[in-house]
Image (cartoon, rainbow, N blue to C red; front, top):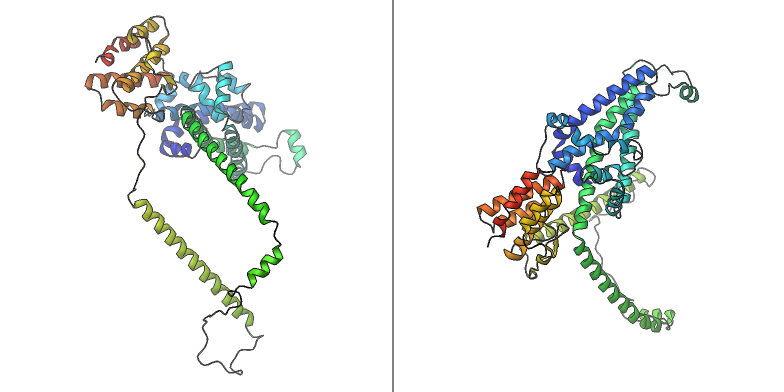
Length: 456
């Protein structure tokens, strides 16, 4: 979620301009409806109910900025179908009260999952972070209502004339529909427009982090094995110590203490040093105990507190200096890296040669002619990854992203293969993450050009 806030800090201009354009238009429409109905609460409910619309604008901009595609406000508002035709009707009806809306939104808007597939996908992604997404929703809602709306409404009440409901109690104002004024509508709309991008960005980063964890499942399995191995060792140690503890408990504690106190170390003297006056004050020169005695005691106490704080600060500075020096020193005796073993799958795709057809280009072209463009791209992408790992010795790991894999591959490929791979990766990312389906001629061209990668 902190990553989401950093993303918003980086691209806040790209996000807030289209978000403000859509949000202000919706707020003005709600204002007009409230004027027709004669009740300000209509506008307030209208602004609140259409939050899923604002969320889609923010996620549309962030999802493309993450992959290096910074879209202008004109482009976002000029192609509303890219973020409107993503289950908005369901989000405004059955899914309006989803308490993990920001976390679940990418499943529908970016992945395009629907119905049962969407429910299963949300269940898998939310197994370990569902509570975080819910608490994010509750905290942002509380901050929006308690801090922003409450503060802005009281601020606007200082600038606007007295309310029509003034002089009525709350029950009368509520029954008459005048419990909310137009200054409340203005304050709540401002609160939503300011805070909603933070909520969507944090949920989107939580979604990206969960996908990263799912792709690194093999690391989690290894850590669990280590934990289980250490748990067995700890249980064996406890079992070995229990007989000793039971045997030790049979002795009389009083007798043991008496024997310890007989040691010569206990009746000993302590040499101490303290500061005192060279010439002690006479009894007549000493201030009376009731004259300023409490001030003197307070001064001594404050001096002791300041001395203790000084030594604590000095110890902290010394510890930080040691920690910094240890970080700067070169690491000695670094463990030897294990030999690289080509993985059976990458990015959730099987890349073992036996799992792929003999002629990948021809198979992908057949899929493209049948209209199965995404499957054709996936087959070409799997074939390229298998060629890099199993034939050309590129050491790719499950933790690598597509761009990192491309950077490692270009170091081993010539210019023709590198150009083909860059085109293939860009087309696959646009299809898989940005939901931009390529044309059939483009996929068939990539399938025909796969022979460049397959050549020795």
